[in-house]
Image 1: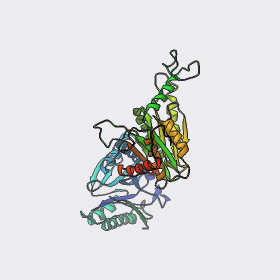
Image 2 (image 1 turned 180 degrees about the vertical axis):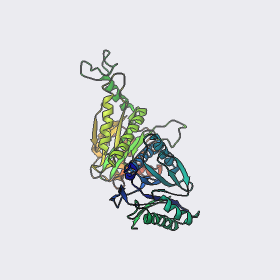
Image 3 (image 1 turned 90 degrees about the horizontal axis):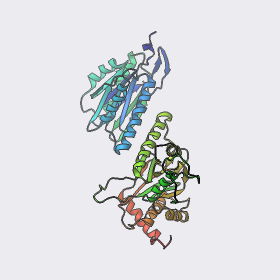
Length: 199
Length: 250
């Protein structure tokens, strides 16, 4: 079996709504065809004002999120102010591109609220593209179908959350590497809220 | 202290015949001449306070002698403050590395020890001078709760219930010995710290030259007090302490 089979699949989704961002992912972690964990966390509070959701190698995403958190903190202590979500996204991009020749094997979606709520999607080399919604992972195509049909600008939090959940459910139905429930991280100007649902 | 050193104070790697490291002692003198810095430990949290004698036209917001190392750790310095800035940069990296490797807020004693280790290195290598600053590193951690540590140019570090460094610190430490008790609340700790500053400051009425921060044991987060809050505590400090002119005692 090629090495690719050992890279865990996933479905990770981010949707920006009127006042914030919803990030979601399912919870299955696979080693080729074996399910190592049904409770793997792929959503992260990366800094006080930026959330992340990732698909790919679990070690890579865990270390990336920690590293970005730590470097952001050092910068914030030096500057005596909070970094904007866009600055944190750029920092993530730079940290990933530094590893151009031995990349972190993970796709990343970031969410945060600066002037407006925004979502960023990054590939393993750190390309930085901003958008209103995004999905990554082995289940991305199925999720995108649902997102494309259901997204409209100015969604409410409830609508954004439901869209996120139904897009991931669609992937869980047809992607064997995605499954075992959904973790949701909602972020607005007041802070983070988390929930987990079975699916 | 100012006895003739017969040339033993140039390269600091050398001990003098009477067993002293003159450069390190001179660095301690720099600390003694810095403006007052105070740290007080209570069961409800820790207090850090400094006197900042700013220059005319200096921007009111700039705070030079008080630093945040991490969410749960603050520091104040006395002596050559640019050295303090660099030590704080090092301390910040130490604190974040700890989070990166152990997923935990660093123990304050660990930060104090590592900074002290750096201080010691600069007493043992040629071509460098010691850091000319003592830091009071203070905060709240899971290991010991509220703690106050002092690092100095010799490379030593010590834990204290209450400590003052800088100009007038001998007088202030005596005052603390008489007036500190382990049962103080955090508010009483703040009042005590501000009393210490008024004890030796030329200005015993305003508050703009006093900078104070607390790390509350409940929130474990460092918070600088606003000028309004400091005014409130300063009023209590003035009534509690009475007349603070030298010679009238505590």
